[in-house]
Length: 138
Image (cartoon, rainbow, N blue to C red; front, side, top):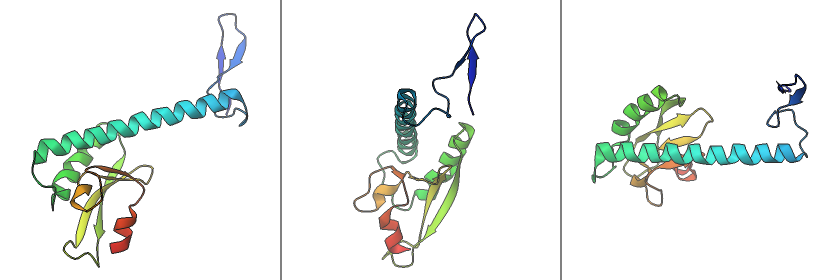
């Protein structure tokens, strides 16, 4: 779809950030960079929000077995903020101590896990594709 804007003189010009730009054009490359930078800023803000929310509930306490306590209200907060997400419960058949884990599934099918650090080698808040570590236990 081509988006047109009209100059004060009434002459239509093509919007430089339109989706229909030729893939090799300098405007298309500029748009891709702009979209990528915005996505990185949005991801950083989402992780920061989850980290602050988690800190507000846990303080300095352990995240072990606190995934549902954090994920359910965090999901509500994110939904009210316009972030589409849902609760997802993962069931582990081969984990030595845990039988399930609660995470948030985002609109783009990525996982947001605000208590990921209860698993060795994971950051405190994980945002990304389904972790290979979880697939190992499923």
